[in-house]
Length: 418
Ligand code: EPZ
Image (cartoon, rainbow, N blue to C red; front, side):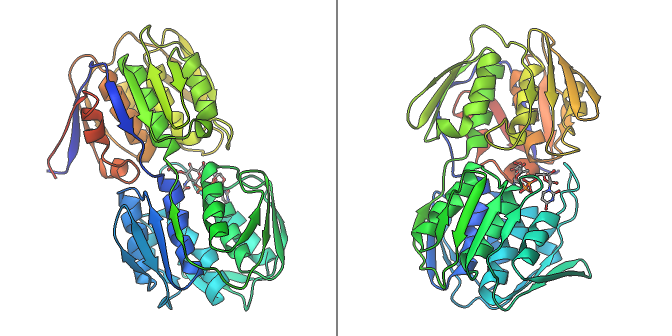
């Protein structure tokens, strides 16, 4: 019987939980190890399915990976420049090896990531940027093949921000000749985390975290030890868990400034938020208020919190709307939430959510990482019946030990099968 997560809801969550390292920071940081021979060490690496996939890919490329939470990556003997379909198809973020391989070895052959549950997700902006830096890039048998003796610095204007596109070109620019300027770049904290780590290893990057990033090429980098930033989306998910159960949860070891837009919306939804330097306390004693959300690149409301916020709105005191502007197909959780009694109407990229008095437990199916988190939240909020979530491998891709962490807050949650 495949593994499932079972939840008996209706319990107000109480207590403290610690945020793990961020998946979307750890993956580009691991790929960055390809830029330099020698042992790079990452601390606070989350134990996730996607991290294990990136490890497998790096080992396939010749990187020696040792450890888990503290991970050492030695790419002194890296020589293979091909990222195979078998690995890339399981994780789109594998495309993050394209920039570093090309920058260090002058060649890369990376399986073109296909579409995924949330959208087509092309990589044309990654490719256009590498071409502007002098690379020859073509598609061959489903593989993106890129070649360049040495990349040259260039000015690149993104038609719209792209997170991994920005990260790929930052890594390519680090070893390029001259200066690379990225305009309309992604401003996500994970991009800044990558740049901070590379600067620690001798890179010359300024402006990361803003829309204009400048990278002065250097000839080599020196590996060092770096600590991965906390996961802001995991933190936001726990805040929503406090809200949907009417609980009182403190998330430790997080960065409130990474969650400004989320905190503002949670307050609008009736959740009392207190914060300190590295903690956030979320309490919800008077029910959930309807609030509208439009997703946007950072510092806007993150698309990776959209499904979780929608779950919260299913139990609000009125009508709310959620508009998804980043991905064209990120409402796969809606029919599953409706199976639990939610009242949601979809039209293109808009969802109208009419708050209901209660949700009931039901068998539901996870379709992607954040959709599965919204089903867990709905299960915690359901006051009668047991929710049975299948395809939990989606959840394990991006949440470290979620069910045990929730059980530590008093949730009635357990795994079965598998
Ligand atoms: C990153 O994906 C994250 N993944 C995603 O998190 C996140 O949802 C997304 O950024 C947006 O915040 C990682 O960091 C590993 P984009 P990425 O390129 O970089 C279009 C999660 O749940 N686009 O910023 O792939 C694209 O189709 C995951 O943890 C192009 O058209 O996202 C999308 O509509 C899911 N051409 C938009 O831009 C390109 O070349 C933003 O995508 C690149 C992107």
